[in-house]
Image (cartoon, rainbow, N blue to C red):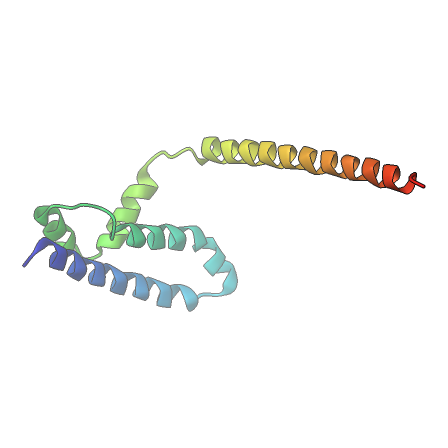
Length: 124
């Protein structure tokens, strides 16, 4: 079997695994669903990335041989010490700076418009 075909088979297995997870998740009460929202999002992202990652035939075979490859990948992700605060703080600062610049441009444009409206109204 070619590597691309192997990836398709692995992706189908992982998609079925995610389908089962989703079916279980939606059977829960709303509050419990919210508790698992982040996990569901990470699982969806991992599944999406499978179409972009380059794996060897050996890696594909090993993943396929595991009972729940998607869960294994996500467990690995969750076991890592990832500092979202740094990334999120940076996003807040960048967006706030962009918003402040945009606000200043709008304020300046409004002042110019007010000036020209006054100048036009003062014409005979």
